[in-house]
Length: 227
Image 1 (cartoon, rainbow, N blue to C red):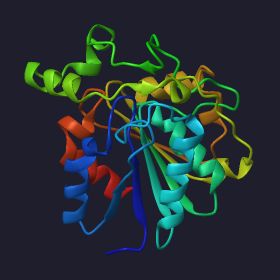
Image 2 (image 1 turned 60 degrees about the horizontal axis):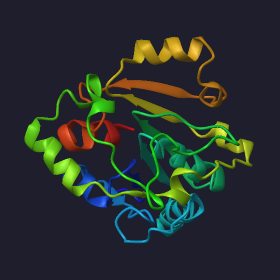
Image 3 (image 1 turned 45 degrees about the horizontal axis):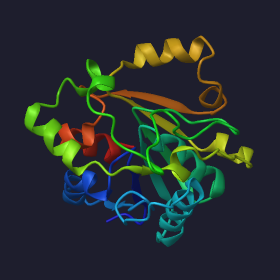
Image 4 (image 1 turned 90 degrees about the vertical axis):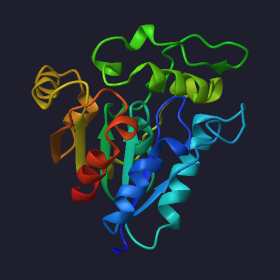
C-alpha cells in the first residue's frame, strides 16, 4: 500500500458514510482512503464554522504518513482547495468532483435558505435534470432521510486563501453532470478565474449525476486511484 493517502471531503448535507463504497473500492486497489467527518456534518455540532471544517480537512492531511490527494465533492471542492492553500507542500493533488475552487472572498455555500441556524436539504426540485437523473425514488428517499442540515456558520463562511503556491498543486476535475467539453468552455469564457490560474489541470469524465460516490462508487474509485 502506498504511503500517499486519499482524503475525501463530502459536499453539503453529506456525512462521511457517503464515501463508504468508494473507500471500500479503493481499499481493494491497495489505496489508503480517509473519509473526513466534517464538523457540523455528522457530529451533531450545529455551531460549526467553515474554519472548523478547514481545520478538520487540514488535520486529516497532517495525519497522513506522506503526501495526500485531497478530494472534494460539490461545494467541498472549495474546501479541498482551502486545504491545498493551507498545506501546499503536503497536498500532492486536488481532485474536484462536480464543483470548482472558490476565490478568496467568496461565500462558501450560501445557496439555500437558512432556518433556525442551519441550511436544510431543500428537496429535489433544485436538482431535477442531470444532477439527479441516476437516482431512483428509493435512492432519493434515502438521501433525503440521511441529509444533515448544514450549520449557518459553514454555509455563510467566507473563503480565505493566502498562499499562491496552491496554483502549483495539480488539479483533476471530475465532470459528472456536465462534460469536460462544457467545463473547457466555461474556462475559456473566464467563468472560473481561480481554476484558470492553476498550472496543471486535467479533465476527466464520469457518466453519472451529481453524486457519483453514491451511484458509481467503483468507477469513481478507479478514477481516484489513477489520480
